[in-house]
Amino acid sequence: MTKSIEQAFISPGYLAGSGDPAWVTVPLRRACGWSTAGDPLVPRVILTSPDQLAQLRIVPDPDPAQPWWTLRHAHHGDQRGWKITFDAQTPVEIIAAVTDTLTAPVPPPRVPVDPYGPLRAAGWHAPRHHDGLTSPKGMTSPNGLARVDRTVDASGRSAGWVVETSVHHLPPIWRAYVDGNTPSHVVSALFGALADTTPLVRHPHRVPPLAVTHGSTSTRQVGTDSVAFALRNRISALARRNSASSPSAPPAPPHAPTSRRTR
Image 1 (tube, rainbow, N blue to C red):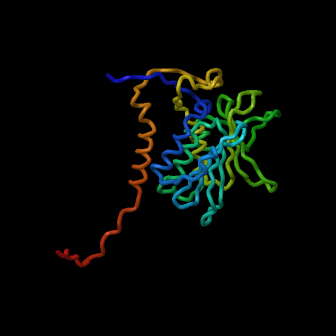
Image 2: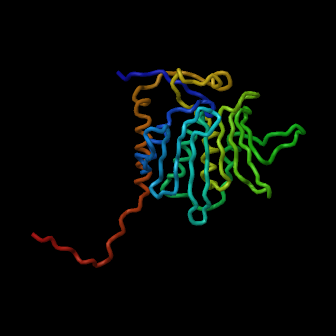
């Protein structure tokens, strides 16, 4: 008889709390070949991509308003270097959407992508100022609890985005800062995860209070196997994705001489 365990399902996902960092870090190591480094006496995690161009750092800070996660990518070819930071309470599933997109073995075609597309499709809208006019620089969730603002530099060009989840007059629950040089498909993946209405799963004793008062939270029994093997299944899926897209060995040239085996 299959055993079950009670789990909480939280929607919108951006109210679900941080979750387990292993959801991001372990697949990077085991399925994507990222290496780890760091001083065991210092509470931080550093992972570096096989090509040494990308690095993910997790540095816990006593101040929850400070970024814990920093994803950097070096300048490469015609792509400028970029950076994204996430606060401690950012759901790991949202961060994983970014790292999964970054580690995809086949990058998308270099065509312009509207990063706001996933937000518009989910019913997000441009916020209104006090004068009633809408702002062209951001998008707000239908419930008003999450917001994306585009920042501009002195010349008026886009300098990036600020993602913020907050409840009325309370301090922000978490923020993310997205560099303006971040590839549009990576930004779109972040915004898509932010707008995703699929409930996130948490332990019933780890449901943030604001998720109860301002979100939709329910509990139900699920199979223990689905909980115990969720991370393993995620790693396997990413490993299959990477191996399926890896280049195969080139075919032998025509009329290649057959080698003889010596005794």
